[in-house]
Amino acid sequence: MRVCCRYVLAGAVSTTVVAALMTLSAATSPALAFPTVSPVGATVACSTAIAPAPVLGHVETHYAYGLLAPFGVAFAPDAKHAFVDSLINPSTPPSRLTPMMDAGGISEYSVSPSRLVSDRLGSFRGKSLLGMAVSPNGRYLVAAGGSGASVFSVPRIEQLNSAPSSWLLGSFSSRGQGAIETAVSPDGDVFVSLEDSDQLAVFNIEKAERSGFGSSDLVGYVPMGVAPVGMAISPNGRYLYATSEAATETGTEGTLTTIDLRRAEEQPARSIVSTVWAGCSPVRVVATSSSVYVTARESDELLEFSATDLISHPASALIRQVHVGEAPVGLALVNHDKTVVIADSNRFNANGATSNLAVVVAEERTLHLVGYVAAGDFPRDMAVNPDGRTVVISDYGSGDVEEVNVGTLP
Image (tube, rainbow, N blue to C red; front, side):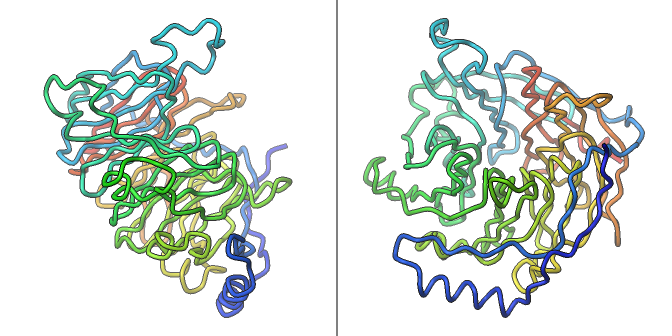
């Protein structure tokens, strides 16, 4: 049965009470225990109610083909090159792996609003590379995988005729599993979401570069709900926003957690500012100075939270929502943060649904679904280049990389 999304007030807890709970937990927990705060705010029901909207046939898209299971996307600081990584072939039995199949890859693409060209590919034996991020200083490309992340040198990747073997600087590891997405703070600390361990791992990249990669690079862990995935850093560099697909093993509603970045770089287990309900299976997040946007994959919705209220009044932080296509995952902000492009993955092949890109405009008092743009199979991650002119998307299911000319969006 299709369920129409609705709000249900779920325990409106005051900011004073939330702060008291955090203080009590931090004061009474053992050194290695994790303080937890119960999610607050409104809940959004699970739904398969795909929103009707026109196909935006005038929007320019370009494709490059040939990557095996492309996943993470990140842009170089020069805005002219995008990096896309890929997994080891997930469908090939280990006994049948060839050397090329047993390698993850990083591809570099030349990007402009009118073209997308694959420049070169570097393969890395035994590495499944997932969500990527480029450090704010532009020096490092970090890709999640295994129990941590691999760190690559952006200048070496961009150096003409450089050998891929020179790109990899080292790797982080933790006691967790299921590393899937990465984020790098302005101070250079690396955050990795451990989907199978319900934590974020925090690593010190400067220490690793100075002393060599090792176990001492691990700063600690931020406790999360079930299956943490997406992360985004606030524009002012003060907060990290992270999603968890569910609050508990038996629950359907997921959460959005706000983390104090400075505290997380020293005491990760005590860095949580607030945790709010965020729809069914929230999986990706992006942020502006005023709003935090989350894709709730099993609600088929884009949710908007007030960045200020996530800090001061988390119970009322959810301010707007809009239905989009089937199973939304990745998202990107364009047009000076007034438009959100969303990857409707249709990853579970719902009847009557297709993979596409939803285009949502943030108007004064509402989120408006303008229409859909064609995409490959299972669009997953995406990134917008620094000059804001193009969005690059990994079409995980069809093995291609897609580019959208932002100037042709409504």
